[in-house]
Image 1 (cartoon, helix red, strand yellow):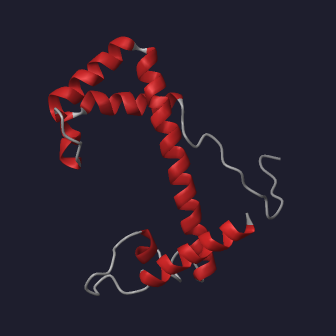
Image 2 (cartoon, one colour):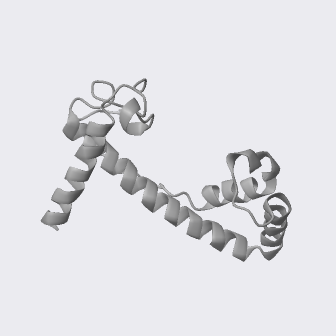
Image 3 (cartoon, helix red, strand yellow):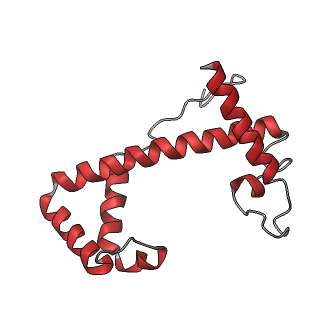
Length: 137
């Protein structure tokens, strides 16, 4: 586990170093690592690394969980699932979706929004209290 943790830290530090170039440099990336650089959201490379790992892990888990729950929600309502499938077939045919397809997938968007309402991916957040506060007496 320690070896894997060291490897993952090296991986993220390498990404941070690669993205340290200004976004105007030819071939440089414009992404979370380059936009959130030191001094803006992170004071140093370690904090930036920790933020990147959080985004990576949280994005992976919540996306997978939500995709599964969308399938569950659509499967529970066969009429809605049929309507979403018909919309997907009509708009996409046999090709992969793109951002340009979003306006034509209104019903599918409603299914996803309702699934998020019923089964939110991030339903609770843990926080540590750093100092005591009194609220409403």
